[in-house]
Length: 77
Image (tube, rainbow, N blue to C red; front, side):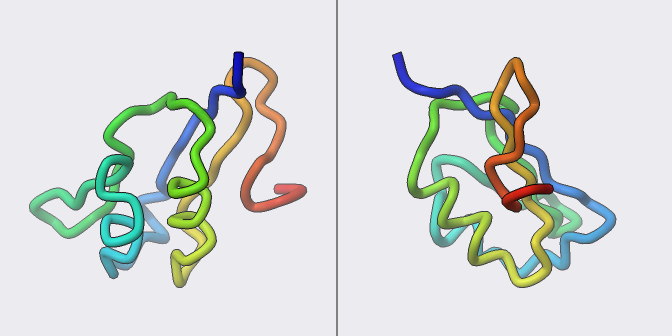
């Protein structure tokens, strides 16, 4: 069985660029205030979700391993 990730968006940092939604529309959505949020708080490890986190211009997306809390992105975070 593959890794499970816990995905969060720091809404105080998010600038609503929408890049995460463009890269991973199945993983993220913008609300009426143009703030990003994950569609699911926990998801299977996914290259597209990781790419969305990496392309966020303000690094508002935090991914950790579900259960252990070990940082996936940002690395060492």
